[in-house]
Image 1 (cartoon, one colour):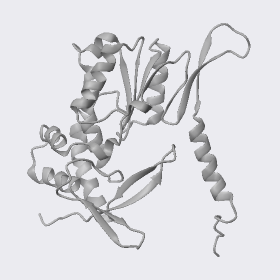
Image 2 (cartoon, rainbow, N blue to C red):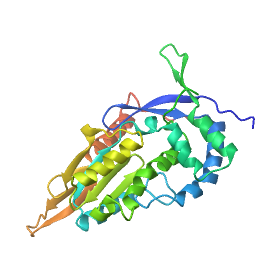
Image 3 (tube, rainbow, N blue to C red):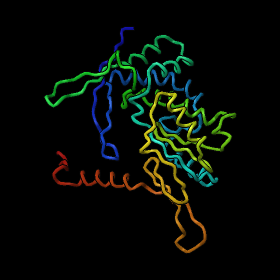
Image 4 (cartoon, rainbow, N blue to C red):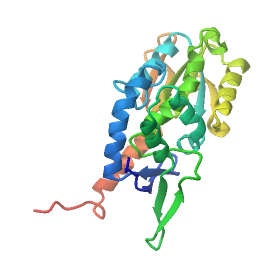
Length: 278
């Protein structure tokens, strides 16, 4: 009852495209409390989550998501809607999120904890080393990336999109479309992605108060054009031995390889290499 979270510390990490991603890092005490809360409520929501979601879930991982895409492509769903949400973690509406959580959690103290974490101020160091605060009680959107509880909250909210693909009477189900989602990254696979499928996805995202990044969202025919997902490239290639037909080639994406090379180069560069102390 006397617990009050400390401001989260903002730091920045570089994304694969060179832009910076903000992280909000709670202190150790708050991370422990968030983990305790997550341990209690996660099984409740796990029972509701759709099978198309693979990110930040128990016994699920990125390799399983890659395997599912491989399976769907081999079953003939070779038209792919490669979608991107704009600043998803920073734009989750608090009111709608708490409404969804309230459908499964009735304990006022747990709900109070979640509200406090959503409204926690963000502290960022300026060039003069002073702390500048933002967010707080007036903040109505976003959950800081870097918090223990944030991935679960993000999955709870996007489960509303996942459910559209599970509805037996829905357009997406009737069209045979399948979605594979890892946190805020997802692809939709179908034999043909027409306007009805695009409309359902766009309308649901708009209904959730989120924004689809149109510049990074595209539809590709996998047999003609490659696409990237979770650091891997999916591409159909001709057989090297001249055999008829094509085969599905899955390999690390160029950006992922270059990023790894950069990390290795940084470690091996004399100016940045640390000499072990005796």
